[in-house]
Image (tube, rainbow, N blue to C red; front, side):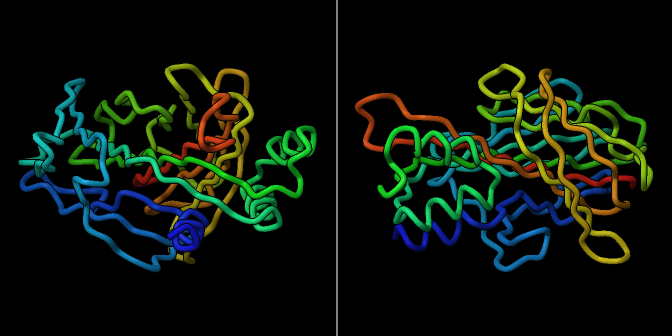
Length: 253
């Protein structure tokens, strides 16, 4: 199980509505997709047993959709921006020292590598509890509608800082990172856009106010991803805790 968890963790997992730009009417079906840089390797159904929260927001109103242990489907979509968020149940990962170090380096978590060295844990296995915080934006109708900047109270939340529909290729666009209700500094984020020429990715790092500024590589279905890791509390069964964020949205469309 731990090996399978490590394989899954090394990939992006995101909320994937059937369409990120929809017409008013029945809501598009939503599934989970697993892959890298928007190249889908596996598609999974939503499962209540693996969710701690499932929420839908429209025009400032949040609707909790995880009720009595079951996932409620979204009903009719009205004009405007709709935000969906799912927080997943925590899982534990343990890897040998070399594989844990390689994984940390791949995700840009060099401060964790340095801290493990300081604590004399360089050759020790890495034990981590991780959580997925998934979010999606769906535009229905007019691109200038409000709601693309909705905050849904996730532990780690990625929030568009400008209307994604109005972004042109080569223009700057920002995302703000919130962790436990405060802006998060120094996080490395990746923006991948699946445009006419296929997926293209760019990276950015959040500033003191939690803003990460990207130069948009094009228009299309887009995904913003990141991971934040910190030391677990003394006496915990793991040494590290992490939160993986993913925001799917239509960029420039």
